[in-house]
Image 1 (cartoon, protein in one colour):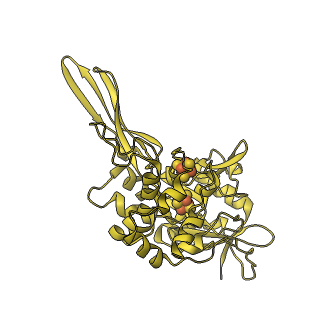
Image 2 (cartoon, protein in one colour):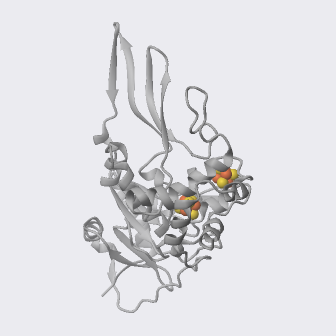
Image 3 (cartoon, rainbow, N blue to C red):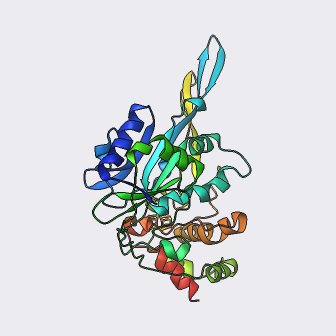
Amino acid sequence: MPKTITNQNLQLLIDTLLQAGTRVVGPKRADTMVLYAPLTTGEELDLTELPRRSAKETFFPLCEEILSYEKKDGKTCVTDVDLGKLPETVLIGARPCDSAAPGILDAVFSWDYNDEFYLERRKKTVIVGLACTRGDDACFCTAVGYAPDTKQGSDLFLTPVEGGGFVAEAVTDKGTTLLAKHAGLFQDQAAVSPLPLAQPQLATLDLARIKEWLDHNFESDFWKEIAVRCVGCGACAFICPACHCFDINDEGTEGKGCRRKHWDACGFAKFTNHASGHNPRDVQPQRYRNRIMHKFKYYDDKFGKTLCTGCGRCIRACPVGIDIAAIIEEIGKK
Ligand code: SF4
Ligand code: SF4
């Protein structure tokens, strides 16, 4: 018999977790938009729309300190960040296009080097996914192998039902433990009717064919045609659940300061700028080509995965109307 949870009990679950000292991150209204953010009460959970930015900040903050240094008595003392102090976290209400992304990123963050900052947060986070019933005309998750009800990446999965509340299904041991620990908030209910799922605007894509074209068209006038409008703002990368480029900078004085890791974007003009002044990607179409190549060819070559969950965020955010779904659809027809 399926387990269900009411809206009130879901809020109570958040309050109970917060009282126990767990960090709870979920969709929260901030003025005119909803963003994934730390919640301070269950009442703040807002599941009415897809959060504007992705949930990747839960594991990979926009900016984080990785060490600090201080010069004392002629000696420089370096202090590492104590990763043991990172809080146990529950990411709640993650749409399938967000919950699937960490599973894609795990490959790169544990490939030639274990990024302990990312991996420690992954270890300490339980993901409560949410079936998507409110998509829009930018969504295309089904075209890249996911679905509005994909449980991939979720530890516990919620499906909204008619009349309010959710069916709750444990997907992993982490989800089973969370459910068992708060069993009193869940009910056994035989007759439930799930709400209709969202309908992505682009249902299917031939990813193998797209990759084959990319394999042979590094030099193509197509890149100029599609990317001449790109202003290199980087919004598409910052908002994306799968983009993961970062830079590391030292900030401070000779006496005191810290080293920070912060997001970067291949759309930025200086992303590949060399110290010599030479920039191998010196015009915007080359930078936009890298965005498409990285997502639909290079990541697949290296890790066997597509670096896109079809969330549509970059389509909604692009100030000049560049539509990645339309671009890869066009590539698939070449
Ligand atoms: S590339 Fe665009 S559609 Fe794909 S996951 Fe990133 S933001 Fe979403
Ligand atoms: S959001 Fe649009 S304009 Fe900005 S870097 Fe991405 S593709 Fe270019």
